[in-house]
Image (cartoon, rainbow, N blue to C red; front, side):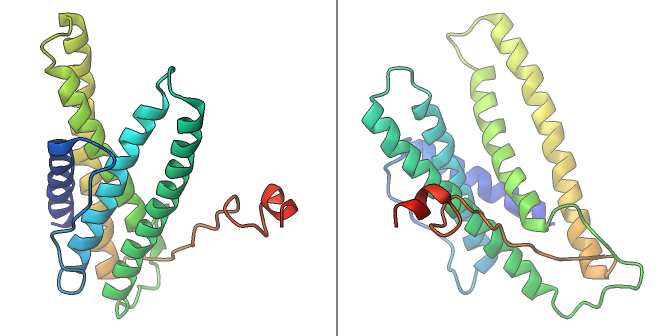
Length: 202
């Protein structure tokens, strides 16, 4: 199933990142972009999410230097754009894969595209990893460990449910019971024609 492959790749990415465990480490994609297109996209998507997760940790440091914080905010903005772009690339992959499927007359559209479900699954993998860390800390109180284990159990259940929902959606699209209709993310704040602050500086 698709979700099994995706979850394994996400886990591999997160574990690979934490070997060096720094946002400045070089990125290397083990999957070929032509012969392993989907795997390549999933790996890149998860890496972006993993680095951004740690950006978000760093910027919440109350002692962070304001100049460093502004630089980091720009990096987070750029990462958010990369994240959105990767979602659209993954949806383009599925659009191409199912382009010859004729939707049934009573086919319905889903509330989100497959790739936005994948986006949630990728973030969920990070939540599971870090909650597991918290649930197994050797320097934490029993109350902390128990609370985090309870949260981890919920996250693991949520991953099963979300994985099932994504696999079901892809099966329904393949059978023509659902159809894909992708809307590009028309972000306005990065566009110097649509953001009035940027426009005023032209």
